Length: 342
Image (cartoon, rainbow, N blue to C red; front, top):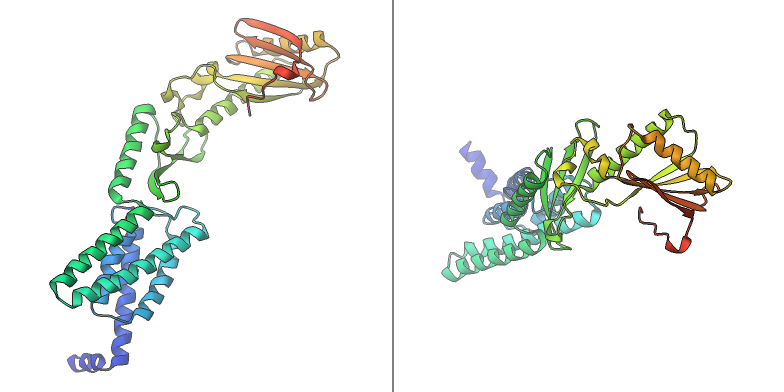
């Protein structure tokens, strides 16, 4: 066995192929370890260390860079998790190219660093340390660093705990966006009652707005469904479209916990309703609106409703309704109309 190994090692061609196979295994393991570590061991630094170790013994740069490019391309297209990564659940080609280029850059620096270490001189060792420092600086500028990524994710977790105490998340991951130079934490969630899987991206550096946009949309959709059902149960037979108006009074943030009791938010909601059936005059329009509001009593809650109508999908008249009753019945004022629900 020893003789066979000696003969194998003495043959330059066979020795090169053996080292190439070892390099492939080490590089593949390094990429796998980095891509599955969820960011706690970032892919690139562990690859740099592994490549430096390989290049101490294997100096075929052409084969090494070829293998690096091929393996990194596979990882770039398949990797979808972890900190310090430009790859996302649906990585784009440009993101994959950035990762491949950086893998090749890592391999070149590792090759040079290993060459310095092989000389076993003090200034060479110092040079290798400088090379590694430069590598980390470039890595930090492109992918951020693990310490800030973990800190940002912990801050997001604390933010959610403080503002949305009932919010449950299924996964949470933080990426560094080198274009905006900010950390982005993406959470995925599932609503208990609606069996809906959603995703929300939180960027604390951009003053995250304080409530989940998806939750807000879901609240309006549910409120709209309640109003529609109430009108039909009340026996009113008219066609109408419902749009959403901004909150007149912002409720407590914790009321926007995804999967929470959305019906508690209904009294805060305001709507714009367009009666799409033709009405012959303003008196008929007012009568339809009054019947609409009457059908909502004890069936649906709301803060205010602004009605429009006239000809089919035409805005000839307008009317306001709230808990204080119906007010402001008048012809539609086009000059004062603000399309604020879109």
